[in-house]
Image (cartoon, rainbow, N blue to C red):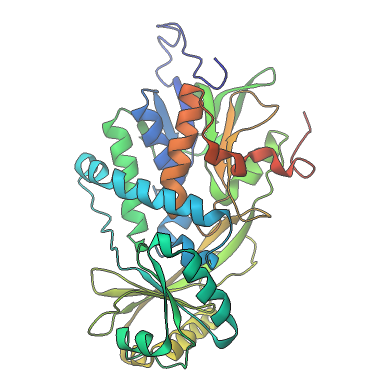
Length: 389
Ligand code: GLY
């Protein structure tokens, strides 16, 4: 069956306890969601993560589920993101019940504030997206919603459906739920290479032994490129650093996420406020820096001056996996039977986790080709993507 699991005859792995249908490499939100959906499809799954679950970009994210605000309302991300947001909301009750972890979804909406030069474009976007609960707010209406806003904004695109949650909790909820569905989740287990059977990828080698598998799904974020290179596949994924801060939220807390081209403010139910984020090419350096922290604080207090009185809690950074078109690579890897990828989600890994995992599991297990995956085909950069054997 094309795209289906090559289910092995019973007993083939007797005595090789580590063998499985699918091994997932990477314990970020994408890997954990993929492991969960594959397990729900009946596959036997092993997930390996070099560090802790959610230790890197997933745990560092702000947790915004805001495809409209983050895209200014156009491009493929809007449709993919809105679908995925619905899927996350549908999946959450089951994830919470299975894992006992509540990622605290907050359906607070997003106000994308319009600098004077963006007013006409955002007003048009709000009208075009009215069917997705968007509307345009004039400056008076905007200041009624948040009177503490300092700047003379030209209005705002109000995206009522958009939301946020705690990204690390979501990642852990997927991981624990995957275990409850039978997956074997192994943190502190580093992939060291793959098992080859001719051209076919037949499992992985780890620092704790080999794991033979029918299929391997690479969900290693910015590290997917290095693993691909070892397999003769050049996945065009580069790290883009994002620094982020946490402050105590002002009283009363914000009525919505505030998004501007320079900074966004994300209120959390625990009374904190996440302030993000830089967009930096800094290689694999994920340390927060004084200059970026100062710039984010200045931008945040420029949007909402009372923030200057709020307690500073902490700063951190993550590495977003970016592809040339800023859309992820999801699906089968051409020319390497047994190898799949779900990586390169750039600024939208949390948001796109549900759609990515459901579509990939449907193709891998059932041989279906969900139409959403067309735009995410890993071979779309084929001149740049690899052809070495
Ligand atoms: N999605 C928010 C960010 O990447 O900064």
